[in-house]
Length: 193
Image 1 (cartoon, one colour):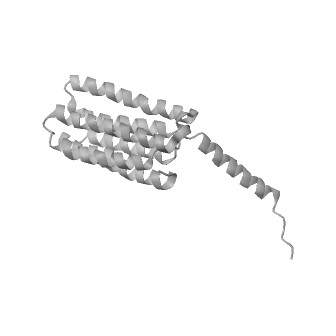
Image 2 (tube, one colour; image 1 turned 90 degrees about the vertical axis):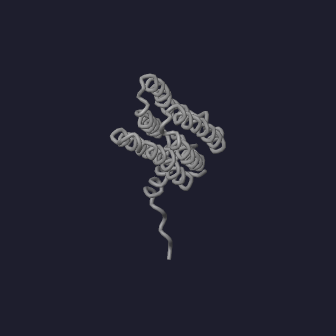
Image 3 (cartoon, rainbow, N blue to C red; image 1 turned 180 degrees about the vertical axis):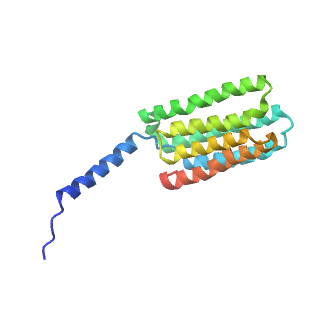
């Protein structure tokens, strides 16, 4: 019995699929550190617990979260560098950075404005919304699950706007803690480290 030769059309379709997947990966920034996000989520849960004791002292409450933001930036930067190597200077990485940092800079500016206007109660929802915007827009240049993570932050921030201020520490814990832990784990398992 003779084996039939592979049809040329089947072989061509396999090649096209391979080329398509390779080009998609080449145009995507895949150095999102899953375990780094997981660790950031854990530090955010700790920050939420500490910040809870300062809920009546806005300056200290915001101070705890600003320290957490600095810690998260260091963790994110180091774990991204460890995972990404040379990819960190690619065109996809540059598009990711611009899309990511523009909403974060806007959030920093709005934080100062809201603080000066004594609208501290709006700051947590603003942070959740703008961080979600940063992740969703930058995620357009990354793996598929990243934009979904950003949308989850945006939904959480929107819901937080319509709840009493005393609930917002829970939103911060669920967002910066829980979502980072959950999506960090997913990214680590599906896309590596």
